[in-house]
Length: 272
Image (cartoon, rainbow, N blue to C red; front, side):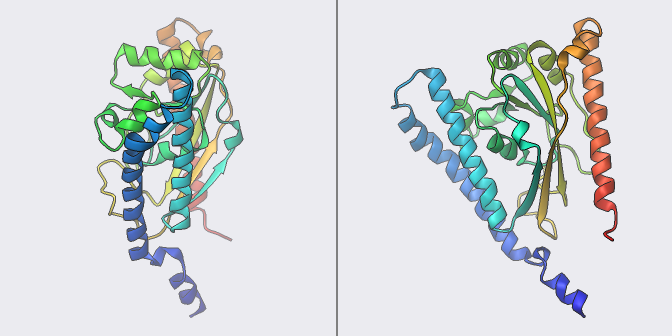
């Protein structure tokens, strides 16, 4: 009877509250995007400084708001999170490579790295709720063109931290991540250092083509683990650019598969 009472008191049973809190989170996110576009950024544009200063203000504002959004979701019972190694994110010319299990992975990473650039879906530039923030922050639209690759390389060479998801889209539940070689090519051309971030979400939520209201039976836990730095020049020395890119991409792919498998085993291990 004591065990049954404990189970009932757990957050997983507050299903309807979490559904309401999830709806409120999506509403606030959309409203925040519109307010940034229509009110905040026009006001920031009136402050002194050139285009670079304006971009820095925009990124700092978005990062601050993203982290407040994460904290709101935590306080309202939508999710919990654990982050290991966040202090090593945000260095000049650092390429932050992460897997992509959920819709809000980018919210966590941008919230943690105040001046990060980010490669985002091209469709975000057409969405009325996200067009303002991604345009003012000068994030890079992933249209698959050489211009996109060159823009990412240039941002790294200028000393900007760059967040990129090599899968290009969210991972299907139960499947291993599949990386495109573009991220490796960008890293070899422009990154001072590569830092992998392994993201796990338990239980799975907000995956590709999953509606926001299909919430899991218990509260979601996000875990972000910052891995050991990788020197891209180690791979650049292995041969011509195409070969080096392939080898680096294979290394990253295997790294994430191994880390995710280890995390899955740890999660599945019964508590003592």
